Amino acid sequence: MQTVRTFIFLSLTLAALAAASGAARADKPSEIRIAFPGVGSGNRPFVGGHSTAVVHLKGLLEEEFRKDGIKVTWTFLRGAGPAVNELYANGLVDFSLLGDLPSIVGRASGLETKVLAATAIRGNTYLAVPSDSAIQGVKDLKGKRVAIFKGTNLQLAVAKILEAHGLREQDIKAINMDQASARAALITKDVDAVFGDYSYFQLRDQGVARIVYSTLGDPRYLRHCSFIGSASFVKQYPEIAKRVVKQLVLAAKWISDNEGAPTQIYQLWAKSGFPYSTFKEDNKGQSLKLLASPLVDPYLTAQYKQQIADAKRFGLIKNSFEFDSWVDLRPLAAALKELGLENYWEPIGVSGKPTRVATTQPSAASSATAALAQ
Image (cartoon, rainbow, N blue to C red):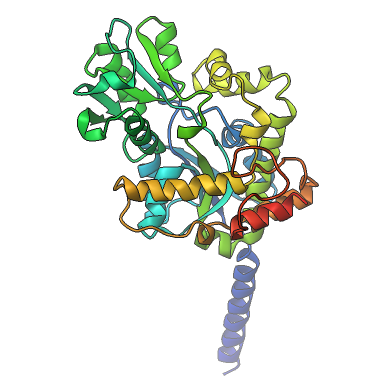
């Protein structure tokens, strides 16, 4: 009988210890999984061009969570935004950079994500053609074979660019290709033109392509991305989410602090396999501090609301939703306060001009951001 009582006591003690241990671990995960919608040149797992890239290239998250014993895993996906959405749908990712259209498609389809901060905003779009092509601009694309990476924020930008030039996607022979495949197809002339990003500068410089259209300097068709997280992860681990966003803020500040002498920024991004000159040209005439700002300010809020409306208008989503309910700025607010950076970046108004005062009726997102800047 004594043996039985001793066994029961030990069992209960071990159960209590296990429960206590589980409770101690409940405030932190064993792993933080981050997805990136794209790859570098030659499929290398490095990218450039924004604050999320700096977080990865400098190993900021790995350093931040090393003392906690939390593993940080990065996944770079050639399938870009749609592939990231698949990971969210299957509970296989906690955070990611994600373009406006794929993140909107995911949210409209029921994915439980939260917009936590801005990153990789104001992206440009370029139209590249073979160097000996007769195509001189967007209007010449009617009936032509044009590569577009569908499901990415490139698709929505292209839809608006075509519309502005009197065309629809039905007027061209749109071919869905990822960026690497499209670059190869342009070289072999299996397509007549490609809409893409700065990566086509490299082909131009090699003499195999020409850039015949660019949104550089034109604010009407800019592409935006945000740093988003799994809603369940953010809810379960709010302190961890704040620490993750804190590293994004520190990366954004490093870019901003060095915008006057950006050599080291472009050199770091060149680890992606795309040369220094590519990033220098893509950011020509733009403020790196403005591009790096993590604020979900009135400008970005208005841009996302317009993107949601345009995605619905072009038939890219069936169900619309309210942007404000998608945003959770608490981790960003906490990170900015802890770092003393509440006033470091100036919020941008709906008009695209810096302002400390919102120029529209305040929303949940814009009001929170305005509060951060006071």
